[in-house]
Image (cartoon, rainbow, N blue to C red):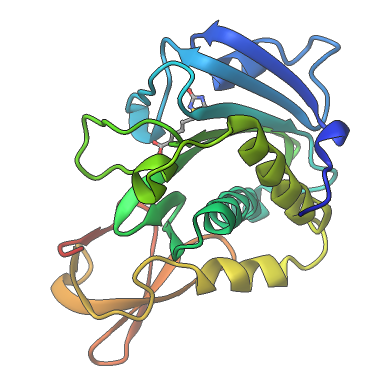
Length: 250
Ligand code: BTN
């Protein structure tokens, strides 16, 4: 059992939409778009992933949603806390139902058994150096069992049973709200939890970067701004932005 806080969110469930993130952005001046509004869809005709990729999902089988928030005071330089908040909520949610190790593949994919189970697409708007609003797009593979990509999994594939999407949404929002309420303080707890759950943390792996070429390194932590801290075999610590580092194995 967990406390239900779902009634503190406004939820708009659409049958078909191009993308829940697009819908939230297009309608953001409508009176119904307030802090803590969730746009959900059964199907997206133009679901978007990171780096202009598509996000494909079979109708009615998965959670497709965007959470619209207006953080009170969040400076642009601290915007990675929104990634931490989203990734931790989804990670907690999947781990709670699956009871399997679930981790965060930096910067914000969620992994179970070396496969991607959920993705996040965050779109912020900035005004006077502060995040004015954030649209946090979340796709979680729930009851879908066939994927074009071999590196994908779902709750059903991992558990061999069907899941109730609403119950999962309820728990997701419970965890999301928990982290959202701690935004604005030091966020130290979220930072540590995020680092603790990093996929392949402390495992020596083959990787490559422009700065270092091919080398053996391991993930240690993240910086406040979200950069990934890697240690090499000479105990040298190097920080990377997304796309500056490539993992050759795993
Ligand atoms: C990724 O891992 O590439 C991010 C995937 C994000 C997908 C979700 S589904 C709901 C929301 N609407 C979209 O168009 N994308 C996000």
